Length: 237
Ligand code: CA
Image: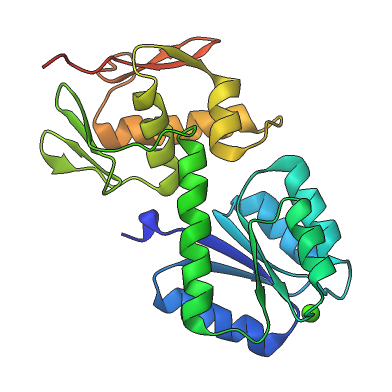
């Protein structure tokens, strides 16, 4: 399902590299967003909340390092830096400022793909707060398969977006406890702004709909009004 695709933003002004990366990643099932300047990249970043950013350090309108700083002020999304320079100093500076990894141009398909997979895997680990989620979670008719990142209700798979899945798995990890809106927002998006609570509510409404829950008849996730959300505790077996 397209809803399960990771969203990757590429900010790169060189047309041929942009096209190459887009073609390769689309073929691997990623949803790719392209920007040729820092400003365009920033607009896409803010409006789409990508799961990973591929960032060229030499942009026409701003230094890639500046772009990275801006991202890190708001978010802990994985950033992979593209550098034409073999200059170690640039790479170290980018890593010091929070880039997750770098790829030196020219680079091959396999290398790029491997770096992306690692960065995404590490960010999912981070999401789980240091403890790797393994095995399965059961609660009533709900089952979460953490290894496969899949979710079932009454034995039927429920197709969630990455964000929706991340929210549900986070709540299941803390099942039985209330998680505040701010806590959830911090873990899922890495930053909190005026629109975040609304965004969380919209995601939660979609999750409930997909779970087949009616408003006021929550079987799995309870809205603690004005505080946050709580998932029912796992059944004791
Ligand atoms: Ca460039």
